[in-house]
Length: 270
Image 1 (cartoon, rainbow, N blue to C red):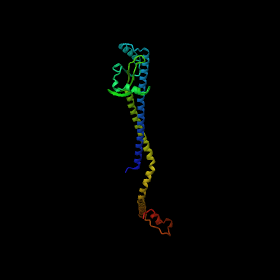
Image 2 (tube, rainbow, N blue to C red):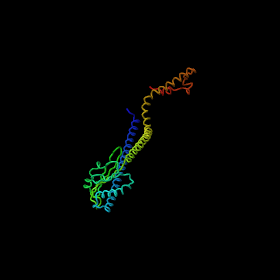
Image 3 (cartoon, rainbow, N blue to C red):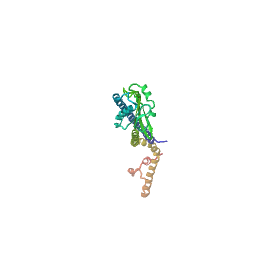
Image 4 (cartoon, rainbow, N blue to C red):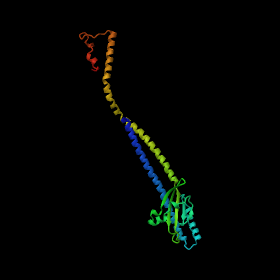
């Protein structure tokens, strides 16, 4: 049966380890979700700004009477004007619902967000549902893809179009993995330090209990110890009598040297 001096520190260490690991896990999950959510919100906000700027420019320079070639050239000119100055590292795709008009993305985002028009028609005016997004893993990289559909290109051109933002967020997930390793190291160090401190304090606290456990053993061996002490005294008296010729004096002559019998038998068990 496991002793209490072992059982109590073991249970304490296990409970402390579970508490520390749970806290670090919850903290890691919360931090990871915040980082991913920040990346998503940043991508949505960037695509909204790009779409607003593009639409505002097309309201000024757009002309529905232009030929197809002129319309395409104008659309590409205005779109490049706002996308080439991007410093976020994002890539963009612009389509006329049939084929891409502009695409500097390493992937084709259209199959990953196929229902932009339906999402825009069922959403409210500035609802986030008009800006659907997805995180896809392709070729070992993770991409945030945000899309948007518009029925016209400004107020002067009735061209429905789709616009996509593609951002590589692999670094976000790599940072989360590195953060997980740091949390694991912190949790391990905290568990080891807490275990050492608790074991030390618990053993010191249980030290009086260990002394109490020795009391019954002392009681069981008390008669044997007394007998050994009595035997040693009797042996010393016999050696003294044999070496000096000493005899037990009479009570009349040497009462002061008389050794009461009770002083010899006081320690002898019956």
